Structure formats: C-alpha cells, structure tokens
Length: 83
Image 1: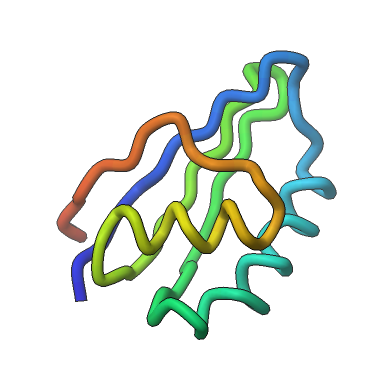
Image 2: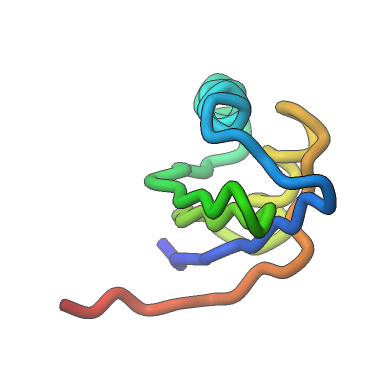
C-alpha cells in the first residue's frame, strides 16, 4: 500500500488536543476507503499538522479527512519509510 505524508497549515495555530479529536474521527472513517492513518505530528505555534497515512491514493486519504472533519491537507506527498 502506498505511504503518504500530508501537511495542514492552520492559520491561527492549532492545539494538540484538537488534532487528537480529528485523528479519532479519521480512524472511525478510514475503513470505508481502505485507508490507514498511522501517526501524526503537531507544531502548535506554527499551526502545522503532519499526518502519515497508508492509502491506495492521495485522493482516498484526502477523502477520509474531508468526510471525518473537513480539515483537508494543503499538500500530500508520497513518501518511503527509512530508518
């Protein structure tokens, strides 16, 4: 399954607790689209959120975010995992 990293920019900053709630919503919705949200990272001060996801396509990953909470990523990149 392809691996993607998406990047969200929240103009007014973001709280990790809010991201945790959005991630829970993703987990509830992801099975409908054969997507697996694996991890996320947050920079509260800069308003940045990074999500690592296995998905059949970038569009499938974006669809989960859109349907789960409406916070679609600004960019989605295919990535390969290293050590």
